[in-house]
Amino acid sequence: MENTHERRQKLIGQFVGSMDQWTAIRRSKSPRTWTDLQLTMPQLRTLMFLSQGSKRMSEISTYLDRGMPSATSMIDRLVSKSFVERVEDPNDRRVVACQLTTSGRDMVEQFNRMDHMRSEAIANGLTVDELEIVAPAMEVLVRAIARMRRQDQAQQPVEDQPEQQPIILDDQGIRERIAVEAAGS
Image (cartoon, rainbow, N blue to C red; front, side):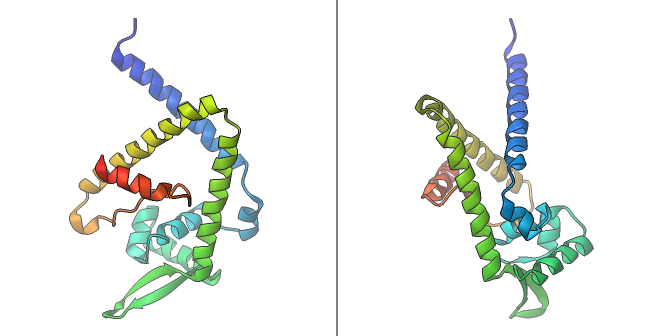
């Protein structure tokens, strides 16, 4: 008979294996527009990060876990594609922040819509009985991720903590529900 620790480790292994398969399957069905745009994963991550608001280069560099020259070069490419613009701080001209352009915001919205459609297609392939299991399980995962984020932020010095952002799942009002649940747990 296995003890709780052994059972937990076995379930974690099963969970990680399933998540690996999930990721591999979703990545293998890359939408055509992705290749047409010629965006790299770090560029997409940066667009998603900037969708939370304007950021300084040091914040972008830290978020991507890259050196300043590498992050600056990537921002240069996003500027040349008209997805990002640099703006001076009106109070301190030495401070320059990066923010999404209208085209950049449109790109983020397009990717969010495509991700939503892919998730919806997966859900449409499930039976009602399967959805009754999976939907609440996904809510548990979202709450766990929110807890992990709060714990990570609690370990950062206050001045380094980013603003709390809700986890964006889709455009159907779930964002607000998740933000409320995350604040309450």
